[in-house]
Structures are given as structure tokens and as C-alpha cells.
Length: 487
Ligand code: HEM
Image 1 (tube, helix red, strand yellow):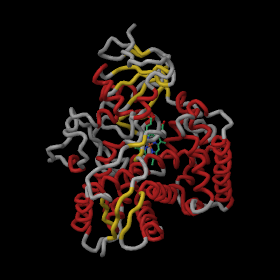
Image 2: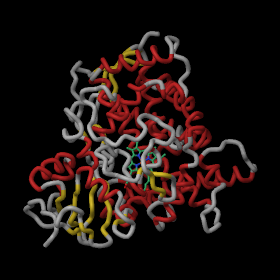
Image 3: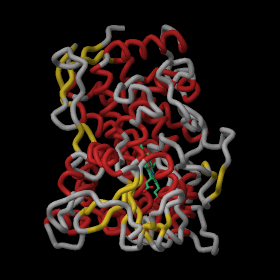
Image 4: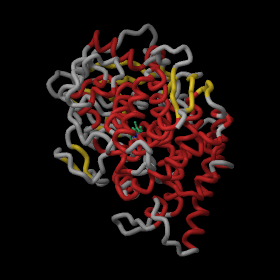
């Protein structure tokens, strides 16, 4: 009786699955106009309650652990891919401890060492890739950005030994693992289908590669590289048990998978947006010349801080192209929605879609315009009432003056009532935000040094979005015209 309104549909079970699946942001926008910020739709037979806007973001993402549950939803997809006993295949308190272990390797000092690693990977990729031979050409960009993402992330986060394996066995194995993340697996995760068999084989093989590496490092008594694996090998849970090797291996898989899709999609969008706005690509180059020096010295963590436009590019692209469009939670107790008469019953799933408020004219003037300079305070398009943590790459340990809460993996902003949350909020908030910023900003800065991009037809158009997999990304082919900058 006090449930939110249900989106009109002709067929039970199917409900709104098709219209939602084809274009989730449009589905949210249209139904918000009809039903308000909080409404229910049928997704594969499941009553799914959307609550958009800053209040909705807060209600869902800051939900209490006794009210909302992420693992009930995600485990069927993630556990066969990551492996047992990590992330959503363990109690939430254990995930909070695991996030803390993983975060240790994501400090300012670590980032300082990552910037040169990432720059070198970008330059060497463009130099050796047959698609970028000669002075100019046309290339379908997203697959190239996917490769740059995996080479840079694996090298920075998992070390050179693992990175080199991506030139051989690991690339195909991760591809097979990836097939486990297809949305039909929400229903068919258990089925002995060809892609699931390959997924299971790949999980065992990749886990073994990591476990063998752990053993070898332990036998060598290695104290050298203080990378994530090193930190996990030396971490213990609060109850005193050391993190077992299979859990370290599974966390290594989870870390790389968590970052890969979101960062790769974001870097593709950035490059496609730059091709649609060559003037901004030129401004980025000029910013480096002005702020770092005409000789463009090797990029460092410190130099990234001197490039506000370069930082704003990432922020603005995530505003319009956040790769995670729907964040879901199971409802564990009837949840009254503050300020309304609604109560969400336990047979519903809650869905947060921070992308809706990120493109709402109430907060972002001319919301559909991709305009990185809107993040500069003096811009006429500057967002209103956006709770702003540190912009750009800001070190995680820096204080941004906000009230914080500790879920066990470090301090997180207490309120989630923000219209701009591409990295989520609350206990499940992203731990990879700062890494992703360092990685993406470095990729952009180095690409801008080497290339000029434009659309093949010279227009300012951008390609549409592919919502068919779990993480949204540009539709393909997404060709661009590139030209080498002559130094
Ligand atoms: C969680 C976005 C990169 C690791 C999340 C969540 C979002 C997100 C929205 C919350 C999910 C939820 O509440 O259900 C992004 C975006 C990225 C990015 C937009 C890049 C542009 C990364 C990277 C890593 C990473 C590079 C690893 C180094 C994680 C982890 C979680 C998470 C471990 C926690 C999951 C949980 O606690 O349930 N991310 N992410 N992410 N992300 Fe990211």
C-alpha cells in the first residue's frame, strides 16, 4: 500500500526489462518525469525500486548494514570470477578488512612510483602498435584503450613480472574471466555453458599463477618491491590469522577486474571526447607547455597537480559517462523513505543511479554539454551545491574538511547526499578512485604529448553508449583520426 508507484508495463516478469536494458539513463529520466524521484519497475521479475537525486543516493549508498546488502546481489556474478572467500563471498566485515589491506598500496608514495611506470607503458604502447605507424591514420580506439589500461594497471599494481605475462597467457585468461561478467549470468551463472566453463578454467589458472608467484617470493625471502602483493602477504585479519594465499590471489584478480572496465571505458570516452573537441586537446597540450616547461620534462606525480584542465577532463568525463550506471542492493528490512509515505519491502531490490543527478540541470547548468572548464570555480557553468571533495588526484590521506566516517577501510565522507558520485559512497565506496585518477590523468597527459585527434568527419559529434554489458562503454566501432605531433 505504501509502496512507490510502479512503472507501467504490459507483461509480468519481463516488465520494463527491455526499455531499462536498452538505455538505463533515459529510462530513469523519463520515468522520473512521470513518477517522481522514487519509483519501482520490474526487472526480470524482480521489483526494483529506483531512488534518484542526492537524497536517493544517500538513502541507498549510505544504507545501514541491517537494511541493505550488496553481496546478495553481486555474489553470483563475482564469486566465480574472483574466487572464494573474498569481496562478496564473505561477510561484509571481512570485505571491509580486505579493502583496508588493498588500500595500503594506494598511497601518495606508491602513486609517485606509478606515474613513470604508466607514462612509459603509454609511450611504448603507441610506439610499438602497428595501428599507430606512420604520421596519421584512423583507428577504432576503445580496444586500444583497453590494452593501455590493462598494461598500465597490471604493471603499477601487480609488478613487472605479472605485467609481462599479459603479453602472453594472462591476456586471454582475463578475457575468459571477463565473460563471466555478462549480465545474463545474473540468471545463468551456474549453467555449464561454454563461456562459464572457460571462466572457471581461467579463474583456476590465474589464481595459480598468483599463488605460485607468492610462493616464489616467500621462498626468496623477498623484501624488495612493496607492491600490493607484498602488502597482502604481510597482512593479518583482526582475529590474528594471516591472509591465506588463495585469498591474496583472489584479491589480486578482484583488484584488476574492478579497475579494468571502469578505467578502460573512461579512457575511451576521454579520447573520443577529445576527438570531438580538438580545441580542448590543444589546450591540454598548451597547459603542459605553460605549466611544466616547453621541453615537456618526464611526467611526475607532482606535475599532474599542476595541470588543472588535465584533471578536469577526467572529472567531467565521469560526470557524463560514469561506467557504473546502476548500483544495486538487496533490502533486508522494510525501509521507510524519510520525508515520504513510502516503505520499501524486503522483496524489493534498491537501485541507485548517481548518473541521473550528475546530468540534472538543477545542479549542472547545460548538463549535456561536456565542458571540463565547468569545474573551475569561476566558470558560468560551475555546478551548484556540489559537495566537492578534493578535486583532481588529491592524496587519499589529505583532509578535505568534510565530516568523515570509518567503515573499517579508512575514512569516507559521511554524507552521500551529493549529485556527483561516480565512485559511489558509503561502505562500498571505491578504493580505486585515486589510482584511477593518477592512471587516467597520466594516460591523457602522455597521449596529448604525442597526438592530435579529431573525428573522422571533422564534426563535434560523439558516439552513443553501449549498455549491453555490466559496465557501460562507447558503442563500437568508434573510429577517430590521429596525427602525430611533430616535436
Ligand atoms: C567500488 C567506480 C576504478 C576498486 C566502486 C563503486 C563504484 C566504482 C561506483 C561502488 C559500487 C557499489 O557501491 O556497489 C569506479 C570508477 C572507476 C573505478 C568509475 C574508474 C574510473 C577502480 C579501480 C580499482 C577499484 C582502479 C582498484 C584499484 C574498487 C573496489 C570497490 C569499488 C575494491 C569496492 C567494492 C565494495 O566495497 O563493494 N567503484 N571504480 N575501482 N571499486 Fe571502483
